[in-house]
Image (cartoon, rainbow, N blue to C red; front, side):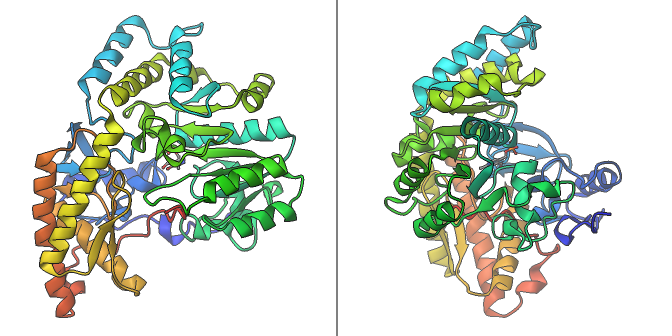
Length: 458
Ligand SMILES: Cc1ncc(COP(=O)(O)O)c(C=O)c1O
């Protein structure tokens, strides 16, 4: 029998007297009907200030959403990164509505498949051929299958988070629970075949020497390296070029996972931004403004063999995702969204840092402009967790939903900056006073949030 559900994934205690009673009531019902309560770990209420933060949304528009308890929020998580233009973007939604009128899933292929492939090849440096999926984890699994098929090898070296599939969770079949440092401790590889042990091996971001040693230890057996090229910091100088060189020397496929970064970084995606072209790359969230869509792209040499592999699914050709992606990518280019996000995020950092300076709270808003994040300056992990939970709690009460990092979208503007700066000033002052008087815990109106993904790519 599998062992008990690890504590991080355990059901939460609900409190119908909370600030968000309707959300908590729905959550209680969900826990009886839906294992784990939600479809995505990042949507579990324990990731936020449970009982204070919203759990269920009713509708969203632009930069904001409204929860089922009638509260309005700025969404600083942007649909867990899936929203890049803003909710209900009129151009994308008009295109989707038009497509609905024409049909959404045909018995034969849609010409949109070819049009979108041409668009992706124009925009992404490594793209010569393209396959589609409906999400990021699927796209990673397809890319890994193609790399294994194209090289005839089994082992995958990876860094960071790449979805829920067997190929990835296999890393935790090893005795030292390899994913503990990559996600969060306690993920059991329940249901993942033991026979996959030793096929997915994690490496530490930024350390070229240890990656080289891993290639040597598994000489001739590594099919691919899959990694995010960056998240909110620039990678160390020369690091990604070094990874590409090692892959070339050892005949392994280099796959960039651009599911979260992608066109937030630049019009030629993250690979264009960092100036290193991989062999293959996967995209999802930032290509379709919330409509389900994923893409696997790469050089002809590696992608073409996929024609003979069994990689096939009915909904990968669905015309809604194709049409939404075409419209989203066109709008990203027309509005130069990456440049706008960088400008906006840099202004957000400036204003949050001014709030920190003026209130005297030891917190800094750093990271690259298009993905700012907060850093509470303390060496005590317990204290940091407490500060982060309190920050989420107090910002939620002031209409700002999110955690200690900011997923930007193009609908955020001056009103969101003003409201967030004002909320941060009040929150920081509250935390400063409680920190100074040793009463931080008394501010808590919820349990400490459970640790979010530790992605290892900073
Ligand atoms: C880098 C990366 N890869 C893969 C995934 C999985 O994507 P999805 O949740 O669409 O399956 C995510 C999702 O957060 C991601 O950030």
